[in-house]
Length: 177
Image 1 (cartoon, helix red, strand yellow):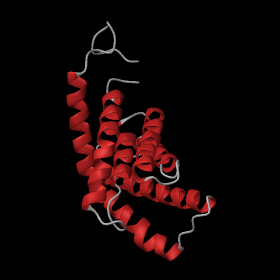
Image 2: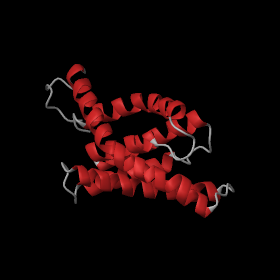
Image 3: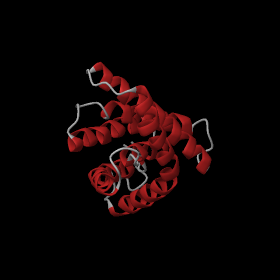
């Protein structure tokens, strides 16, 4: 794990419950933003895909526990979304906002359809037309809209946390785990 990955993951896990509370209070139940999905995409964009995947899983587990839904119904999809964003970063322009928006759209699509499939496998049926109109489309649009500000905030908070944390080893700040 690099010096950059650790603070990004720690800050995202600290922000996760707060983001879920803000989302639950300030946004409508359907058609509102999925802040943890956007956070998972941002973690995937900022970190190595192999470190972002377990972080995305942890973010989804936070959502599963806070919302009290089927355990794993969001943990697995958010892990996939983080992995997808981290993988897309290597083939898209890492500094481009449009690339981040494309990763957010792709991550949202994969995560929402994976959640739909997991819930269907557990016997929870969602009507396809309702899913597309009320869940997937608003989620994808919110993700594309919010990925820029969330990426900026996460990057700044992680940089601050990295400067405050003690060195990882006796070798100084350039050490890598």
